[in-house]
Image 1 (tube, one colour):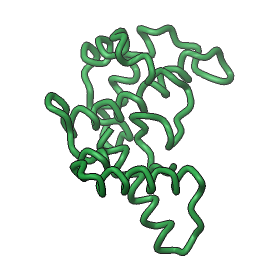
Image 2 (tube, rainbow, N blue to C red):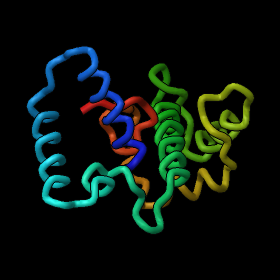
Image 3 (cartoon, rainbow, N blue to C red):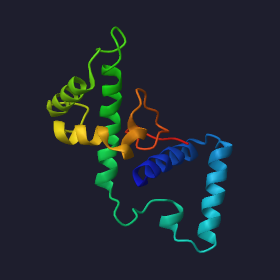
Image 4 (cartoon, rainbow, N blue to C red):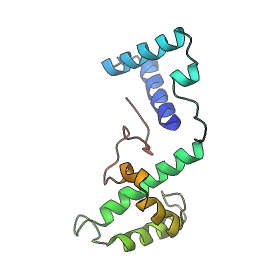
Length: 144
């Protein structure tokens, strides 16, 4: 969540620098966060820019990569002409191969690791054919 939050902050900073008006949601976020800091809460906690124990940036980067790969898999399993008509095993195999290619948008991942991640229930939220910058673990630049 820290990488996501940092992406949101960069988008917010660009809005402020450009003079663009903040949305009601952005104003509410700012007010709540600044009030928490003013009342003595640790700024890192209030801004969600510090990893909790047991969490790391590499874990978050891994989930972002899985989010991107899973979207490709979801589309690959769609029937033709909207997808490739692949079964899950073939889609996982092809995605793992694609991740190993030079210049791939996917970070390299072995078939076994990808398969384990696919069937892990904690990754269910990553299994969508579309990706929005607003999704948790989105690999894309964020906004509010």
